[in-house]
Image (cartoon, rainbow, N blue to C red; front, side):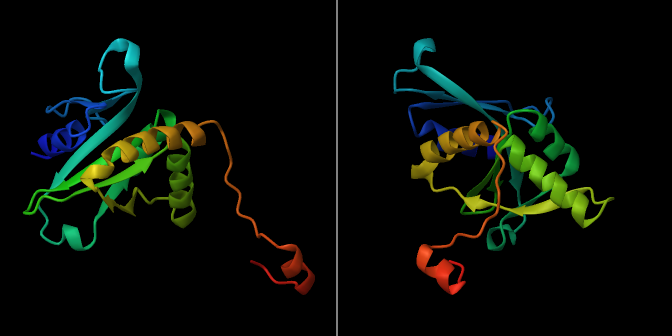
Length: 173
C-alpha cells in the first residue's frame, strides 16, 4: 500500500516517473524516481534519477510525532552511494506521507553524531517532514541537487557573522 501511495503522489507530476519495486529484494532502496526536463518523457529529456526507499507504518500515534529510526548500516550505505529520498506512509486514515532526504555527506555527518553520542549505538531517530502533494517536484529535485552539492566534498562550517557596526560593539548577529 505504501508503494502505491508514493507512486500516486509522484505520478501527479508528469515530469516524474516512479520506478519502484514491490518486493523487498534490494536492501536499502526500493527503486528510483526518474526526472525529466519536460512533460515529454523520452531518453533525450531524462535529466537524472533519485534513489528512493519507502516504508509503511500502521502506528496510530505516528502522525503526532513523524520520525523514523535509521540504522547505522542504512546510513553507511547511503553515505557511500547517492544518498536517499526516504518516504514513510502512515497507513491509517487519512494516509499521510512524510519524507527525509539524506545526501551522502549528511549521512556521514549523522554517523559521526551517532559515534560521538555512544560508540555502540546502532541507530538514530530522525524527524520527518510531511509531504505536500503539490510540492513533489520540489522535494524530488531538491533531494537530487542537495545530494550533488553536498557530495562535491563541500564542508559546512559553523561561523559567527558580524556586521561592521556590531563588530565595533562586540556583538554577534
